[in-house]
Length: 93
Image (cartoon, rainbow, N blue to C red):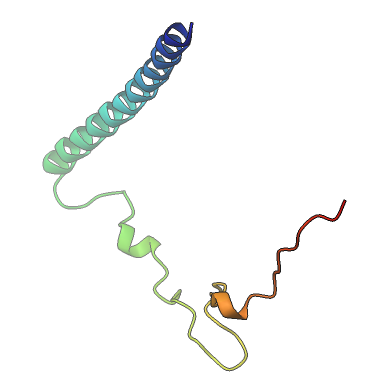
């Protein structure tokens, strides 16, 4: 009975994986077609393009937070095991 459950679970896993891979394949195929059509259009029209460059879309003023007085870099600080205040006690019956 365990073998049957394992085979069914494996079949279900492989089916889900197949569906996900087909979806990724279709997305990548659509992206490749879009890229190819853009490259063809760019070659036919010349260098002038109506598309925005990614460089123009990026805000270069956004930077990593600087460590300053009174705050960290938005990440929790790790504590040593010795600094931990958790104690384990036995259960009294």
